[in-house]
Image (cartoon, rainbow, N blue to C red; front, side, top):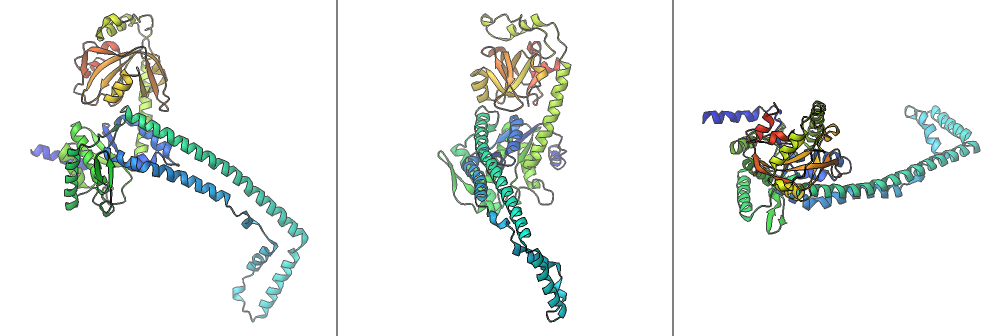
Length: 487
């Protein structure tokens, strides 16, 4: 028991080097993918980390309630700016000859001169004399030309700015539509995992816990700003009090960590909702100690927090590192070998029905070290895309690796946790759904393995795509055997 309790101290000495992360995305982040200024950055980071994301059901519900308001508000900002351009009072920029007299008067510091002083009279006389000297036809013509130049310049700017704003409005509306459709696709194929709708019993238990936490003032979600919210959010038969939004995010985080049952995963809340001081300690800028202790004691996993800006930065830097790793793999795999017959035979042995197998040996020449990619696939994406559409998207893959990939295998994620199907690759093209990623097209229907290959002791083996050669799948008792053979 004492050994188990001592592990609790680890939560206060996190070094941030755990690569096994699951990011819990809050509503404010999702809404920002539709913003005008940085929406593209938010969305790109979301796509690049999609396999490590989890969106709680309550977050998705709040997004559905607020996304129209967010999009309308952004479009209104652009339209208001356009109206502002139409109402510019250009005449305010015109200069009159009478505007020059106060400027001349300002040259003379008259505050030190008394009105009764003779010097004051001389100054006033001098100012009038100077003004009369410049109040000429020539100067007035100069002002007319200057005003015309100013007017023409403003009108030119106004025209260009109005055109640019119109294009910006049209572009933003179109881009917002595309992002929304792509977000729906990523979720429908389970590239991004969204929490299941609460059952009636689950909601009842959650609300009971929320009322308990409210009574004892337990963070998060215990701020006045949260608890003073009125109304409910409805989904089907569910009615969820608005004031418990943040509490439910936390309870879902605990729930998913308990379901994962993997103490090696670090759960990271990505949220900018920090001004209420019910998530982060004002001095440490970290989740309150009692929250981290609660999370660890109930899940044995660690929990932390990132702002949206830090999340985007972390994902961008990680993406650069992954690109370099893939590039090094591609360089290593640039030496062809002569295993054509053996590889074709391996495919025959892996699938369950040999009568449907075509002899592909003429097509499989100059294999590299790795000819097979194994992709993690959640249930819906596996069923609807891998089996239903005979393709897989979207996967990050270096161009140099593409010509060597002849097979794609599917590792079905929890609760299946097995490699179950394999297909022959027909083509690998740029994904139309995700910039910088590839889509893999199959030659024919994916084939079921004679014997599924279960996950080994390395539970982190399929945080992303893995590369191997097809022979390594033969006689593998588990996934550890596949990659052990490469050592």
